[in-house]
Amino acid sequence: MQIEIIRTNGARETHEVPKAEPLKAIAKLVGYPFFDTVNLRDGRVMLVDDEGAIRDPRAPVNAEATKLYHAVCRPGTTWPIRGHVAIARDADFE
Image 1: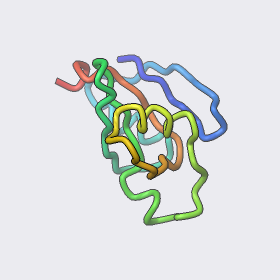
Image 2 (image 1 turned 135 degrees about the horizontal axis):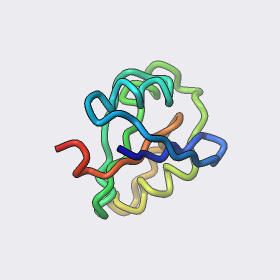
Image 3 (image 1 turned 45 degrees about the vertical axis):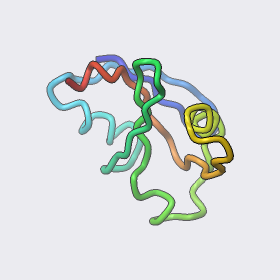
Image 4 (image 1 turned 90 degrees about the horizontal axis):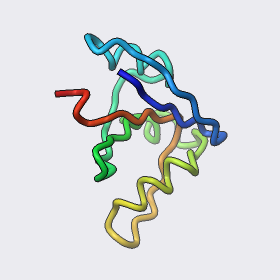
């Protein structure tokens, strides 16, 4: 399955990860083991660090990921996405 990584510096990378255990492969690419998901409402999900803001409140904000997040959130949401994120097709996890 193909995923896109958006790094905190805005760099984008495309990777192939095994469909059998994609979360293990994604965890190695982004550097954290636990994910929360953001439904991007276009057939994709963004996997974000579930504990990053708690573990390290000074972790770098991912401006590109935050823009995607705010585009699908309730108006007025200001919470930023911190750390690297992965974007995948939601259907790949069925």
